Image 1: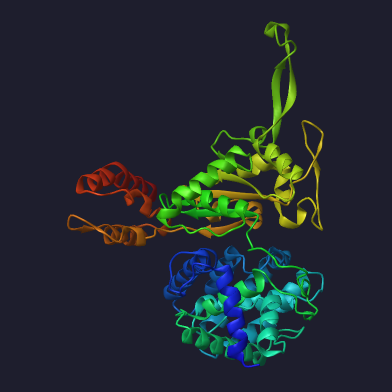
Image 2 (image 1 turned 60 degrees about the vertical axis):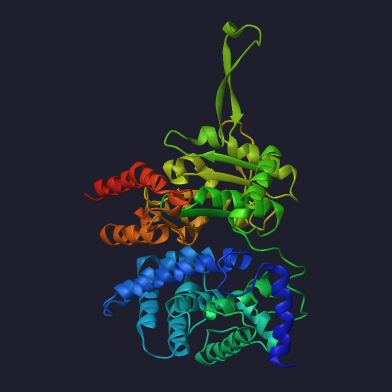
Length: 508
């Protein structure tokens, strides 16, 4: 069957999962929110890295892309853990291989294969000699695709292999280190797919839209194919359709006023309802109604971290209890009292078929390592209750066994004007996925008097990023409700100028 005919079948599946989709240039809806928005931010960051290099320091470029790919979670944590086991030399060699690949003028397939050949022995060594073909393939191609989105595509082997079989009847990747020929062949397939998407007037921006299209139709509801993978860990056939992938531990980070707290509300509803919601203004009331119902039902809990917040409030602690309800003066005793986290974990464990969400606003304001204590390891997806590497600990006060259920989602927010991600505890960073939220000028595409709000805010932020850094930019939410010049004057005097003053004082 011709490629175009198979793609038309995929097109129907794609539309079922992305109901509001019109084309890839659309800036709202399930596909944009789940697949494209965060990639745009990564591509922009990649461009900034490459624009800032003098071309003579490939190791520095590679190190920045190493961290960029790691933050995006394209590659599982085991790959970076394997590199870490090799120490500073291993990370340096991987960074050098990535940097030389990214700065080379040779064809993508040539430089990708060369980098894979250099990186694989390092990962394999960290894995005790086990093969790491899929990890290396994803690591190398993800960095390359961020650097040149029009020329390279990232490869998640299991899903791309499934897509290739469906489209062409043949697998593209062998159980071996990626070669230039196999990557070139898949690139040719990707360009053909992009051409078909363009014929449908879907307006693909680059090969990331090809990757997103294939990812949606193979990952969000994969069908049984009766075929097996390529002997890599985790390859094979999904026994049943899988829901949209959502990270169990997520931190939304960015400058103040970018809508992070509102985004946690929307994401909590999406998780609990099992659907994708539009983030357009006309859906806000519907989302808030659903959110309040979930809070009332105990399936969503909201808390805010602060400097005095500790393990006792979050997990469990000792609280004074009087010996007699009628005579408070008769003395008291200390008894273990459940904290916010333990309480929702117990609720989630009792209803394993329902998702629960704990939202932690301003997560970086507390000493997170102190608040979580020994439980930080239990947050890892494979250490959750019911998973293959399930772990439980004995709590220090109640002496009871405790584990984190696999239907509990943690969503945190982090204001980068207060604290950079780089300053977070390494153990915390490894266990959370991060989604950047930067100022969005689209909602401000209007004029108040003679002043265009979007252009005003963009001009301010360009100046802030140039003079200080991008983490101290001003969020769009400060201007959302500006209707008159008087409103604008109030926002500038009462909110924007104090933020700019504070940023200036911090930079001295």
